[in-house]
Length: 369
Image 1: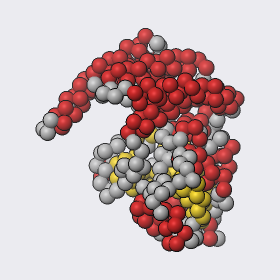
Image 2: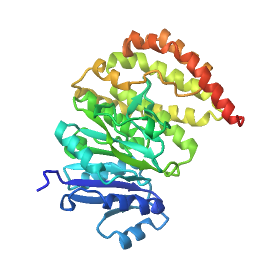
Image 3: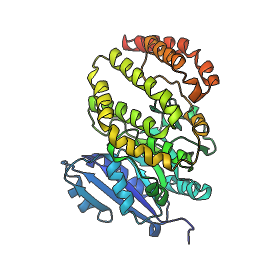
């Protein structure tokens, strides 16, 4: 008897046969008791032979094949609903994991009674950090702490609370995941993990980050075109803040978030993906209002206890001094200090010089310096 709960590993796939060839062997090598482990792959309409290859090479994997691409969020929810495990581990098809990955996450999940636990994610060769804990700005754009830094320069640290766990390599308590509504299927992909974690905290649950559990990520594995990616980011960030802030804070943040989305569109070489994201948010408002009501009726924790988990509430979502000054002005004029704390606003004032330095370095790199 291992004492570990039964676990289901869920992988969502879309035209990723070449990725599964490296992902699945790492999952098969986990040091988790085989009797307590199952694998589910939800295929979203692949045309690259993924399903045929899986049936031939991995007959022990439960395959659910769809004729179209339903997106990550809906497919992951389906995997959780079908799972026989008490714990569900979500792993992107463009990731591989260390042998101890699942055991470390599950032991922490069970031991701490958390709803979800996220892992450290490094780039494919393990040289640089991809995800080392969660951060989010006040208008809903999630980010990865220490992204791009040398992995050796970011030491392993004890488990800690996190606003969200990166959906590419995380575990959830299946019962809590389903009871809390799972991922929002309307997100399709991107920021669905941010929304889930935020919702967990609102509803009185906890999300943890475990830097000792290691996964590796192959960048640009999803194949989504940049314009649709941007549209989803804009739409989904607005949706998350609309659902999860309390009434008073939403009244402050939503106008600022919309104005900043307009600012990003105005500064972009191609404004259409940004504006498409805002239109998609507007079109979804009736459904989002219902989703918001469902979240708020289950509220067990006030915003003031959750906001510190944002970590980087003023991290700008666009580069350059013009955008930074626009954000700073809106923060002052619309009273965002009421939401994140006046101390955080004051601490962010000095970021303007940093933004200038960063922009200058970007321009040097673009010019071949």
